[in-house]
Image (cartoon, rainbow, N blue to C red):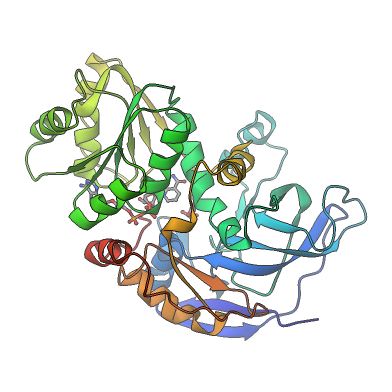
Length: 379
Ligand SMILES: NC(=O)c1ccc[n+]([C@@H]2O[C@H](COP(=O)([O-])OP(=O)(O)OC[C@H]3O[C@@H](n4cnc5c(N)ncnc54)[C@H](O)[C@@H]3O)[C@@H](O)[C@H]2O)c1
Ligand SMILES: OC[C@H](O)C(O)[C@@H](O)CO
């Protein structure tokens, strides 16, 4: 069996490579997957730097990574939907399947979720990953394994845009033009939104959003939330306000502005994860009868739809990738994400031969946008 080298977070800013035993199939419905590519999420970087996100604290060494695609190398006795050699996108959270949220179709809200690289559970920056077969999604022939690794953040965006109930012809404002906000913009377009406004505080990010899929952009201003909203509505010609506003920044000023941008009877979705408690314009919510929803990870049908959107050419996930690095350069890749040098970077699995290194020839705007933001993603 090939290497099961794993990229382990020992404590904040202390990572190492460890050869770990290849996992055994725990259940006849499980499959063993050789990891080909893994994207770095802001939450991975956050754990690396701070050792915790909210009440999730890294107490013991933990393998990082949860945005992965791989190739099936072994199938359990009861698996009928996958076979050796199938290329799959990995859904990295495994619910209990027995609690009320699971049984009512909201398994992403399972209190006993085992989510990769959320302590105490190990992540997917490793050689082999054992998982229930129904959480491994076969990729169509026209979707590459590198695109497969981006299905995870795309599924986050699919869930957010579904929560916004976006309809054809509607206007959608998206606060934040990081990977999640960009993918929300792409999904909103694919759902038929005719006006999609990307908002950020970094011009280069907005330039990229415009070249990617936003129909309009707006540079958020350091004025009152009401005034910021008035300017945004005027600049993007939103009339009485946007049908839906999505926060994909987690930033308090952006959340406050959102409630003044949404139209009477419109919808607001909280996708960004920032401070736990903020000052929220509750009166705007009340007087406009705004429907407000949260959005957490992804649930029934989200992975399938994300893959379909890529297969149908409706969402281009490749455009967000700045480069692919060999496994041995994982720490370097984390540094580049932390320093904001990339929008998305992929780490090849330890058994993957990768010729390509950081692609510095990619669209200058991508690098410029990411560098300027210096963003580290989650929380
Ligand atoms: N709900 C979920 O399940 C889920 C899953 C993954 C990520 N997230 C969260 O989604 C958010 C986006 O993720 P990401 O990976 O794109 O992060 P990111 O940090 O790359 O992007 C956030 C963007 O918001 C911009 N921003 C900051 N302040 C702003 C303001 N006042 N107005 C407008 N834009 C502002 C930043 O410049 C940046 O471009 C993060 O908060 C992350 O924690 C949520
Ligand atoms: O995309 C999924 C998110 O990155 C996770 O929920 C993260 O916040 C860790 O739990």
